[in-house]
Image (tube, rainbow, N blue to C red; front, side):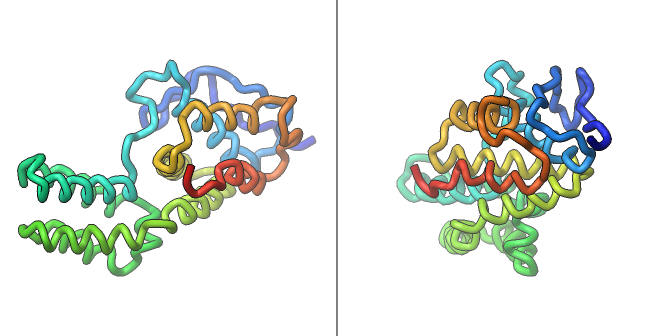
Length: 221
């Protein structure tokens, strides 16, 4: 048996997330290589737990869903439901996400800065709409897959806790956006990582995260 896993202490705050209990690790092999996976598993539980303080819960929007919100806001403006100024805060938040989102960095590469500049530059709704639709086309069907790939990378690394937090948030938002309920994701995650009577019956390699991802393989519910 290897070195014991580094459990999170009884109370630890990382980027406003509070972990307050030790999990059941009876199915886990004790080795430091699993530190990132354990952190991810505890994080998913904390983000979805019903009694978690709202400040510590999952974010409501990621880059992909922000693009969808921008598209919906444009539609509402064109339909006369809201005024033109309603688009400004959405564009500002989208611009921030384009800068900070690691998935955007990979998927958009050299054109990311162009999107940031053009979305902020256009004053006519038609120009913003074109850019929003182009951005959605870049993200649809790719965002979740790239999020999972990057999550696997940072989980294997084990030390990049803030990246795990950011990507786990995006992952959960995508699942909920697909139609999975937070309760379903929560209990499937608890059973997978912390219930000894449910498969997998052993967790001894970080690549088991792929089996976890496969629980949520339906593209649309």
